[in-house]
Length: 357
Image (cartoon, rainbow, N blue to C red; front, side, top):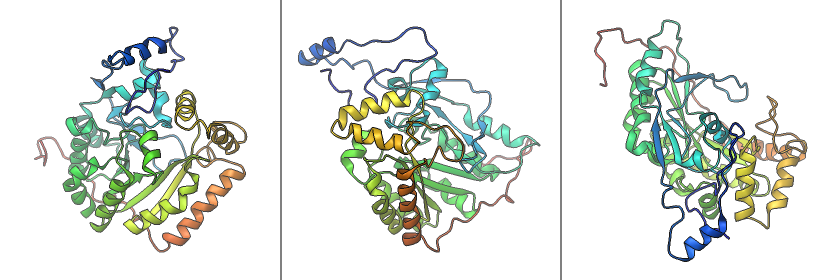
């Protein structure tokens, strides 16, 4: 049995379907190294590579997501969530959706400059842009590089609305900017939280903030008047689906204004990563979870059809939906998310003083 890669959601490199070669590990040799005091993962520290992006704002074509634009300062994510749907995007960079997604992070250093150029286009009409879509903009690397912080400065400078989605409490570092954005009704924050059980969180989302810390920050932002929503995502039938009402109660008590959800779907190489993780950590629940996830998508582990891929279809999906509706009625009645302010947008003409250099 090979030793565990601690702090990683994926324990393996997953075959990239765009590559002809396949990486194969030798678990017996890795176990021998481990027993003899060697670390077989000594050279696997997270690395980042700077890429020269040519554009930064992406049109969102899916009608399921509720926003038209997204922005990703990073590709890949050190949080290592075993279920992450974005893992497949790494294959387009000749990397894999397993370990590479967590340890080979692509960095867009010029993101803030590209965003300012985007706002200067005469064709741009102010609309909310989501930070992020494929990776967490407050993943651990952000503490050092501060790319997300530089982007928030541009959003504030141009007064363009921004939505932030994260499961990391590093967002607290940027409260000075978020408070200023909120004064102009330019920001919404969404925390992802899908379990209150620390043992499950630590295994499933190994480099994320604890539920306790996320709840404390939801309260802090809410007390400051910043509109906060919570994404119970993904709900994994047979693993965390029993927690919907308890999560809703906790986040409502902390001041969140609404909840939304998705049901796990295993698209592309995410299936290999998640099922391997599930078999390692919860072998006694493997078949039950497998069957219930499939039952939530008409017998398949993945459903790509717009309109139902996020919330599933079938009896299990309906049970989860009813739990969400009950939670909203019980804990969030009368609460609302104030719409963004689109009237404050301004362009900073050439030669005009910029607030942040």
